[in-house]
Length: 388
Image (cartoon, rainbow, N blue to C red; front, side):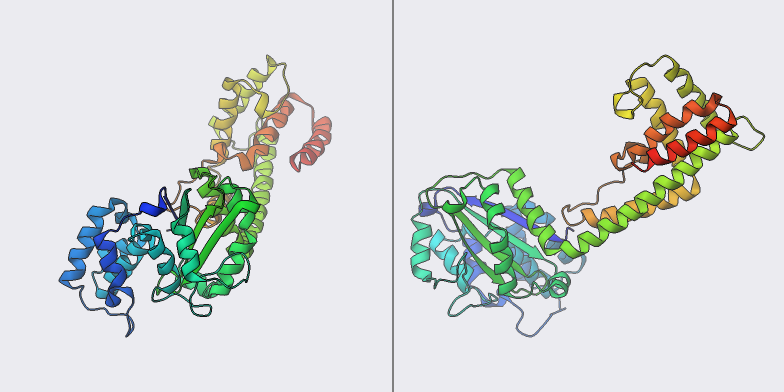
């Protein structure tokens, strides 16, 4: 599950937006909205189970909601309620008419009210809820609706457990929102409301262009997810970046030592991997007939393949493997900000972060036939090159 959940929908014709009986029922039944007496671990009721089945048939992608996974693991009243709540949150634009949608944002149980309702926007000017509802309902262009959600523990730790924190977040990123929707900043209009639900505190964000222009692509959605995620988790992401840089440099230096040791002992009695010797000899022969620039990016495919095979063999070194495993562990933590599913680790030979290892191999292979005094001088030069 990603650290930030970002769901986007749009209403193409706000004035004729239709109701959904399921959504309407869920939106008006108080017992589904919240748990007044804390978490209820008793089994889910038949009515809840029937409603969940209807929800899944209506919106099949709701099978992938984290709340559904929790419900499948433990079918309690509280988990059923959390799923039904989340289903409503993500599909709220299907409520009967956009006017009801705006009122829902501002008055739904769980919203933190800023005065007599919870709606806020780019300025602190007083917002008349009825006027805004009419304005949005009569808008002639597309209206986009977004839900931005955090896990409760992250919201508490980072201070996003109140409306003011979310309001400041949206205001700081207003230019990114406009850019993502292809709307001129001066033409952007947005409204938001914070809902402090049990497991996933979140904000509803409604966006449109005053002139009716704009469009939103998947890339635009991802750019907003990235902007909000990097803003909310900026301190933690910075620490992860520092750790990745430190381990990357340590791994590159260790790889340099392994390569230097191999080159120094390739013709001696000291044990060197037969496969590694074979690969270095092959690379040496290939480079004799190559007249281009001695940089990995300029090499023909056949020579690149040999270099990649050498890096793959290097990755088997115990110390290098341990360092790279740690690098991948931290990188997965960094990427969890954006991706729902864990991405597989990239093999060392395919990771662009470590391309300098390949260039060091290319420089080093020329030392195979050079005398010892000259080799010492070149080793120093190579050491400097490796730091670039």
